Amino acid sequence: MNVLPILLELQGIHENLRTIQRDLTAFPPDMATLDAELKAITKRQESASKELADARAKDESLDGELKLAERLQEHAKIAVKQSTHKVQYTAAIRELDDRERQKAAVARPLKEIRSRISALEKETAELEARHLQVRAQFDELHQIFLSEHENQVAARDLQQLRRSELEASLEPAALSRFNKLILQRQGRAVVPVDNGNCGGCRTKLRIPLLAQLREQGTIPCEFCQRVLFIPPKQ
Image (cartoon, rainbow, N blue to C red; front, side, top):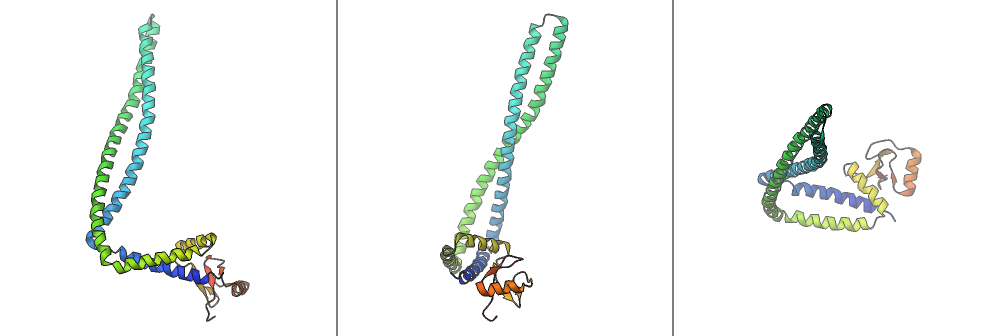
C-alpha cells in the first residue's frame, strides 16, 4: 500500500488542527485572565499536593521516632526509681536527661511539620474551592465563545474524524513513527526532496539514497528521519 497520500493528508490535518486550536484558544481578555488563573491554581495545587505528601511522610517518620523516644524515657524513669545506690542513681539520672533531650529533639520538628501539614491542608481546600469557582466562570464564558466560533468547532470535529479514519488505515508502527516526527519536527514529518536535498533539514542526499527513493517511493532521511518523497515535477 502506498502510504504517501495518507501521510501527506494526515500532515495537512495536523496543521489545520493546530491553526484551529490557536483560534479557539485566542480568548478575549476576561477569559484569558480566568484561563491564566486556572493554570496558576492548577500548578500550585500540584506543588502543594507534593509538599503535603512529603510532609505527611516526614510526620510518620518523626512520629515513630517520638514514640521510641517516649518508651526509652519511660524506661529511664523506671531505672531512676529502682536505683538503690548513689552511683547507680546518678547514672540513671544522666540517662533520663539524655532521653528527655532526645524526646525534645524529635518533638520540636514534629510540632513544626504538623503545623505545616495543617497549613497545607487549609491551602489545598482553599485552592480547590477557588478552582471550582473560576472553572465555573470560565466554562460559562467558554460556551458563549465556542458558540461564536461554531464553524471552527465544526471544522475541528470533521478534521478529527478524518484523522481517526486515516490513522486506522496505517500500521501501528508506521503511525507511531509519524506521530513522533510530527512532535519532534514542528509538524513537518513528510517533506519533498528539493534539488537533491532533504526538504526538512536541507542536507544533501547521497546518490544511492536518491535511487532507493525513486524505487521505493518513500524513505526516511538519514539525518533528520523525516519521510522523504520526490514530488512529481522531479
